[in-house]
Image (cartoon, rainbow, N blue to C red):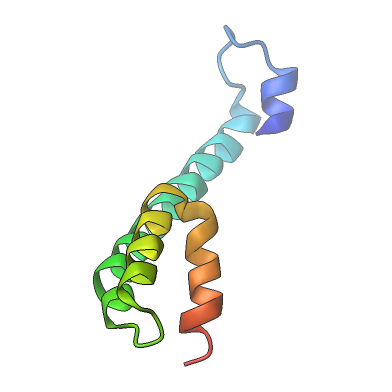
Length: 85
């Protein structure tokens, strides 16, 4: 997609040979956004409240981190609390 954005005129129609890459890029982006959103909500709703290793203030901080910094917080939370179970 970077190659296309650099080498193709923005006003031009996407050439046929690049269309599959654009469609695949959009699909991969859509799947990753949906996956991140589902993980964020499921961790906030099910995992953080039942985590016995966290006190109430830590749970609140993790919920805020998962909500506002989810791209970074979801993998860290998974590594610290979900992976070792």
